[in-house]
Picture 1 (cartoon, rainbow, N blue to C red):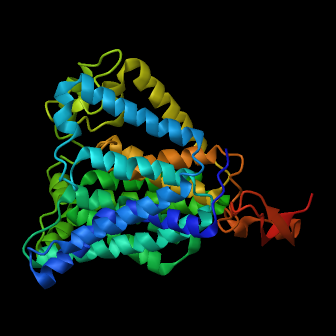
Picture 2 (cartoon, rainbow, N blue to C red; picture 1 turned 90 degrees about the vertical axis):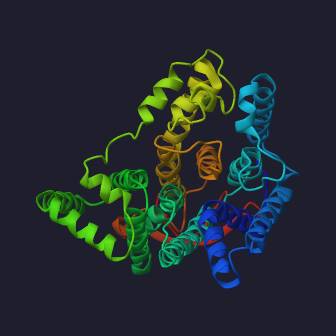
Picture 3 (cartoon, one colour; picture 1 turned 135 degrees about the horizontal axis):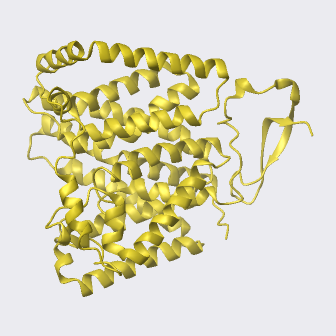
Length: 438
């Protein structure tokens, strides 16, 4: 079922999705800035930020109610039914599923149904992936500079960010800007990415560093480069790695001195110096405890918290099996694996890049920390984007041509080509592009 949306609706959907990804650091920056200007008791700014987000969510939802896709309807009904059954049958789960009606910020029910599930819905109606990619580049810059502002405002007040949330909230944006700087050769994006990875290293957790590294390596392997360029990259990485290994202690001492100079206590540096960087910090014990209580049909949504005595699994696979059971949990995992595989192989280059970044910043992150049920719109955006990649109407990206300099231009002619699946407003979009000669 193809639901046609006009250009203005596409813009609203795209901005709403970008705001969902970027919302936590933006609202924290606004909160700290207004607190510094108007006093710590001033809270109207936070309320206004949430009002803006809710209005955009409702505005986007209103536009698509007239033509709901079958998978969207199924997806929403699945979670509504699962939530109702879990709340009704598993009494111990209730305190993890719902807190208070006026707890707008931390109530898991609000986070799931007001922000996470709508992320999947909105992504399913986005068709202009080039516009989405471009808008994400702007929001990623905003996130990095908001995070920089958060860092300095807290350091000035003899404090520092909560390392886990601070760094994971930046992960998507920093990885996006890094890849974008490779794709578009934009120095400002590269500088912003360097600032972002520096903030994650000095003031964040090790998990985002691992996700960032794996995502970047996956991108370099995915990207089609001439053999000479690949050789240069491999030699450069080997040389840099050897230099770091030879000067490891000196580098750590220098980084520690810099952290002390700017007045922060870097958890990543401390764990590197103590040889604890690869430790699981007790996660293995929690996961083993939850896994020992697996059942055939599951313990309901948030059931892993009960099995883990208030602690979540820190592992998406264990969380899914604990909640949905050995039968449905494994089926869900297989379906997600197929979706992710198909998504990363989509012909739309910009959509492929977005899916790759979301894989590293959401699903890989959920293998280390967090829960897909608690304000994790990025994971639901990833699932929606992968489902989009299955649509036959997903056209090959025009703006995001993969390595255009490597194309043999003698085999192309300039022409006006009808792009099916362009603007979904009932009219085909015409644009200038290089068309292969048959």
